[in-house]
Image 1 (cartoon, one colour):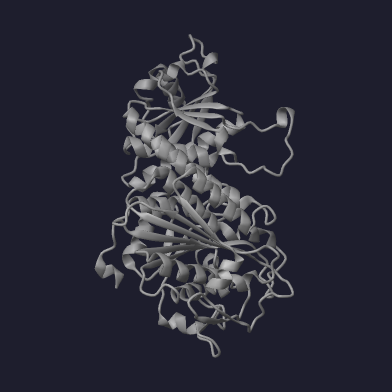
Image 2 (cartoon, rainbow, N blue to C red):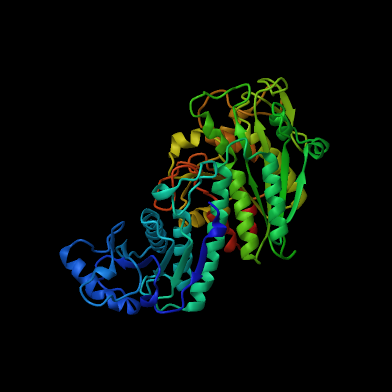
Length: 517
């Protein structure tokens, strides 16, 4: 989706004077009025209400044409859409999600009637502050409008899809300045999330390690981010045997993309690391052919980190320094490919016995983690990766697996995920699981002797490279694509992780010393 074609703005006039394609009001269950800026339509709402056709229930909608009313047309819009929010709820996170879901519904309705110009009147009495109401509304519409049709021929005539071109918010009686602020934040986060979806939707021949590098360079030119790309020769000099080993079977050179958002030396530094495996065949330990095309999604962790860095820079977070690393390569089969039984040496010297070449994500992340911690001395580290199928067996496509060596960091991510409705579930770590990774010939092996606790043992491998630094690992294999389908989350890549990271870092405060032990 080319988000640059969608204009998002505040509508300053009275909503009744809006003459565009679709005028929208959000209605809470059992509250039969449209507020001060919907008075001309209140009699219509009450009539619909009395029939029982619309009660403001969750997912409920009612579309009508004001020009067909018997009396003089009360509003200038071509169509009016009422969207149900459901019942009021005391949980602020549920209220946020009510707005996103309702606004995702607006996007779907706009697409079905081919509306290009939409105005949403915000609900003044909704129990959230004005900035969050605007932000969640914009996120819901942007994410709900997403389509990826880069490789499809344009259709003509009645079959041609119509994109939403303008989405406007009317304050509805809320603070206009707060609405403008929330609109802008929602636009930035929405665009960053859609960028992550676009990266993931690209086929393996349309998104290579070099594309990660070029995208980061473009971000650095447009924003305050600093970018450095470590190419194959630099990785060889640094001794990054994990990235280089995985890359041995590919004709595409690897890269370690480094992005820096710098504020003040007094601020804490957070390191983000995202797995950028642009296609994963499994290597010599080849994957089954059925569904292998989905392995173009194995770079969703890297896409999430890149999207988060984009949003962080554009928002201008002033409370933290953020470093984003994306180790990027393919994992293919070639004459030089890694073989089971081979031994590689990671950045920093630790050796690893390769048991399964399809357990490659941990190899490239280990190098990036060790390098990032030594180079930038972060106060905390968060990595994201489509790391294991085991997390899908355990949690399905509804929760991201979370493992951490620090309770406070873990709780912050759990809270951030709840705020943006990208839920996480914490899994244990411990020496019992680490023993499954003992090797007879090297410091560690990259897979256990059996498949038990595969998500946890993969995290144990990464833990070997973080030392005492507070660290959290997000296994997004189940949520990066085919995540719980919602009005604003389609089938395919979800962009999960971008909004969680931005929410977490926006509220960041230094970790308590006791938590670092």
